[in-house]
Length: 105
Image (tube, rainbow, N blue to C red; front, side, top):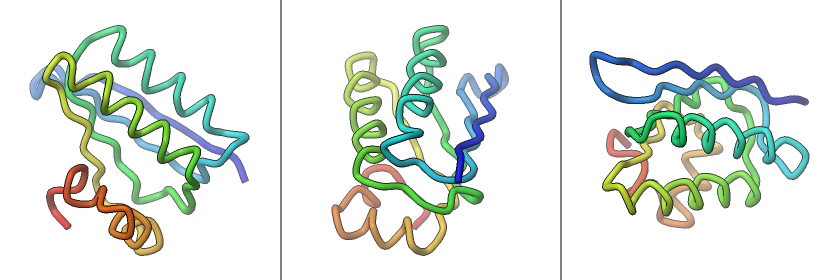
C-alpha cells in the first residue's frame, strides 16, 4: 500500500494539521519525513498528526516521528498524534510513546 499525506497550517490555532493515510514503512518513510520536515521548516509550530486512516506504521515510521519530535523540542514545539487505530495504539503503548504523543489515550 502507499501513503497519502495532507498538510495544512491552521492560523487560528497556530499549528500544522497533517493527515496520514495508508502505511508508513521503509518505502514510504522518506515521503513522511519530507512532509514533516518541510512543514516545520516552513513555519515552526506544533504539529497535530491525524492517524485515523493510517493502517500501519513500522519502526522506520516511528523513527521519523521521534526524530521530528526531537527537532521540535529545540524550539519548544510539540507533535501530537490523534486518533490512532488500535494496532498503532498498541505499538505506541509497548514503547511508551503513547504517554508522550497521545494525550487523549
